[in-house]
Length: 128
Image (tube, rainbow, N blue to C red; front, side, top):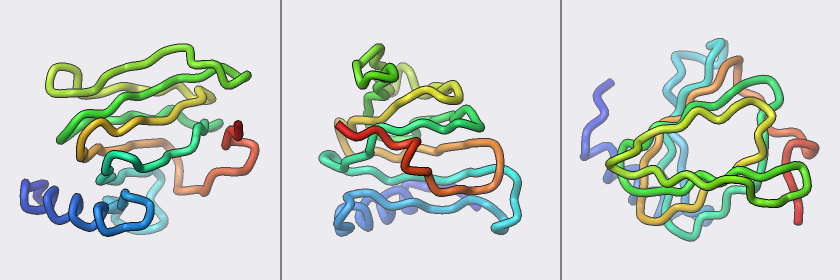
């Protein structure tokens, strides 16, 4: 599969028309794959809950746009913020790290995690 600007523009259009203002594009070969790989098209104002991944780190690479990755402590206090843009394009998020993103302009990221896909448990989503 080629990652083209045409693909990116199509995904961003789908995200713009989505109630969540984001759309995922699965890059796995099958549901039995032992790693998670996906493109995420994200529009400003999308809301990604503060969450963590207990069993895996997460690698995020920015392919287009600008986002801010935000880290939190166990009490919901912001501990760090990282701007991803054309100068700094990626971050590795340690397992168990509470995090979310703020989308500053229409963006495409690739997310990679270990293990097969699992939905987040309620204990892994922080509520304020």
